[in-house]
Image 1: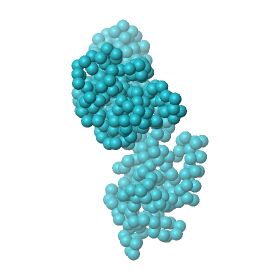
Image 2: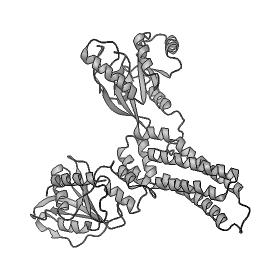
Image 3: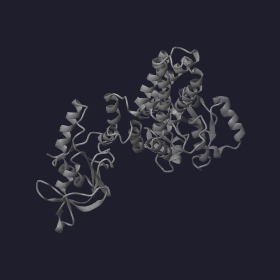
Image 4: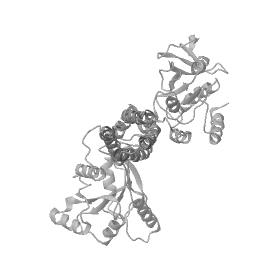
Length: 484
């Protein structure tokens, strides 16, 4: 059976059945498809070593030796031999990692072969015909979670690391992988468990202590409430660092939108001419602005046009403004704003934006120009630049950051909440904690206080994956690529 045949069967199988067996052995290519220095085929499960024994021979082609076993965490040089034909497939390095000291906490074998689709495909085919099955998307990480090596927040951070586009977003994901959020959640859970045990004891043994210590727990729960609220307050910024912002560069024709894109990217990505209406379609690129991935969209200049092609581009520009998270509204600083500028400004009325007054090198009286722009556009942030001469571009970058991140971020490695699932659960948790606080202040019956404490503990368990449904797990791990 070829890899393509197996993949077709596998896709059909997983389309109808979400739950896959976790007591068998899986294999997949763990490096991207295509040409490269090396490719890595990962095999995990109870029979991983047996699969390797059928494929891997030590030594050179002239002196191949079939292996009986492999020592854990050692690199072996040899060749992969097709089990059906005894033909040598490729020269490889092989590592065996005995459970639980592996990524999945199972027996794992990793085979490093020459990069390229044919070699890696043949080795994977050989592994599949030797007792392994093709892994589902994210199944290696899912096994690591189910085997207790990582919790759910750490599993989710793996895909954030893979998708990170800036050093800052990589840092936040790495902190989560190392257990920062898990530790915070566990600390809060321990506080609530202690509180729950006390109030349950006061219910079960009322004769032991008639004076319930409500006042002792009020500052404790206030501290918990503050911690949860502080984490929630970082979500908007954390989401921006993690996912970035869709940023539309808009303005009328020939104001320098494409030049602005090029100067931010530090490369000639867009065609720049003196002819108005050069850009007919959108151009999209990602730029790193102090750790924030901005997905820049250079749009067609907006104006009234009878050209069918240009009109289509202008319509697309208007759509991009509606869809954008952030807008860079570009003006020609050397000329007074006209009706076209004012109309475009109205389109961005409900958007977080920054006005970029380009061609400032042609302006003689900057104070008068600034006053004129403010009279038309009010207190909206305005920054003067010359994209052509690369002037004030660093100030523009700083202004973009300050406009997008409204709160001052002082610590280089400040913790942020970056996952919407965590945000939703902690929002519920905060509501439960507020109920606990109200109950303590009102000195209600211990039985009633125990209810929101139990609810808060269950919610926090969802964050860590202790009380998470199969549907949620499937949704999380299905976002991964096969091989991770």
